Length: 324
Image (cartoon, rainbow, N blue to C red; front, side, top):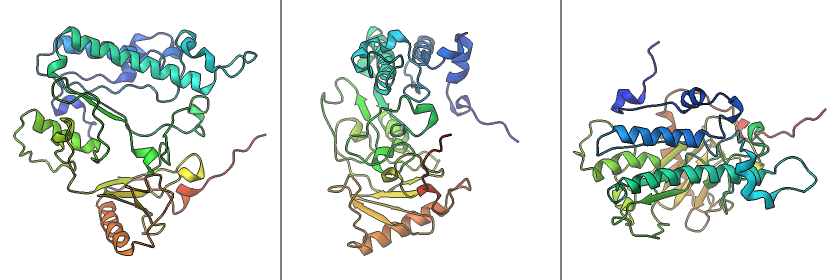
C-alpha cells in the first residue's frame, strides 16, 4: 500500500501534525488538550519567522473539540457559571467557555504577531469551522457540549443547518469594509481554493477539476450569487436528539435545500429564505422542484467513491442509554 500523502507533497514548505507536536512538547499527557492552541500558535509563529513573504498559513486548532480539560486558572473567569457552591465539579458552560477563551486568546496572539511584523495590511485572514457543535450524547463531550446553533436545527453530524452552517469571518484592513455582514451569499469551504487563487493573481487555468467556485468578490465585501449547487453526504450514524437527525444526503441550490436517503425516500424540501429553521417541509407543495433537486443529488451521490454508509433507517435510530 502506498504511503499517505502529506501536505509537503502538495507544495507546503512546513507541516506539523498537531498531535505529534503536543506529545513532543508536553510530558503531562492530561494537559495535551489544555495547551494545544498555545503550542500550535507557537509553531505557527516560529514557522512564519522562517518563511519568506508572501506566505500562506493554514492552522487547525483543536479547541473546542472534545475532550475539553481546561485548568482551574482557565476556568476562573467563568466562576459565576459554576453549578452550585456545594458541588466539586465544573459545569458544561464553564468548561466550554474556558476552552473558547483559550482559543480566542491564542488567535489574538497570532494576530498581534502580524501587527507587530506590519503584515496585517497585506494579509487576508479567514476564520471558520468544520461543523456545528458537538452533542451532549457523545461520551467525550457529555460534560462540555455547551455550544449553541442559535435558531438552526441540527448539530455535529447532522446535515441540517446547525450541523453544516458555520461561522465565517474575513479580515483584510483596507480591502474588506469593517463591520460588514453578508447574509445573502452561500459560500462553502470548497470555494476557498479558486477564490484565493484569483486574489493571489494565479493563472486561473488550473488543470485540476475543482468543486468550488471563484467567489473572491465575497472576500472583498461584495455580494455574489453562486452558479452551481452544493452537496453534502453524512456517512455515519447520527447522535443526539431526534429533531437533529437528518437524511444522509443534502443539496443546496439557490434558495432551495433538499435532503433525502440514498434510495430517494425521506424527501425534505425547504425554502431557505423563509424556512431556514427546517421544520416546514414543502416538498409536496413544490413537486417539480423536489424532483429536479432529488435527481441531481442522487446522481452526485452515485459519483462518489465507495465508503461506509448507514443502513437504511440507521441514521434515525435512537435508543435511550441503559443504566445498571
